[in-house]
Image (cartoon, rainbow, N blue to C red):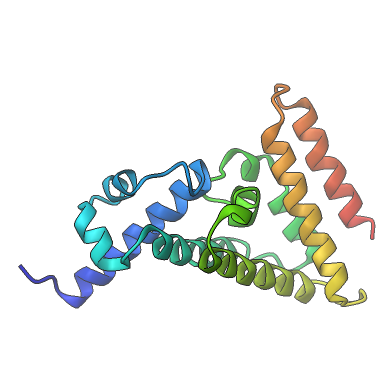
Length: 182
């Protein structure tokens, strides 16, 4: 039975949304094709017919995750607003909806070239967005990269510690203070 173009596009969007969420929550290696297909309400075969491989799906899911994260942060009109949202307790609690860079940074070096390239494109896009929020400041790409590295590092550390949130909260607060004092 043939699927209409509209239904196929809807299925593709659902697969990308679920894959982006699962990859951010469980990592690229932590999610199998069966779990991805089940989460999207699709069959294993339909997932492969849409993307051809798990790696191709990961590449597109990275881009999808970055696009949805960017849309969520699009209302941040200043660097301070962006930092406050990015380094919030809510962002810490919701890795499946948050920054794909922070969620997957430790796993990307072990991935194939296509996934690494997609991830690099995401880092460049986030850096460009940060640079756009730096009016009145020196708009150096290196400064924007340092801010991105601080954001990602702080969120990653805040998610990793297991001290009943005391240290985690301090990590987020310290990074916010440092970024807003420059």
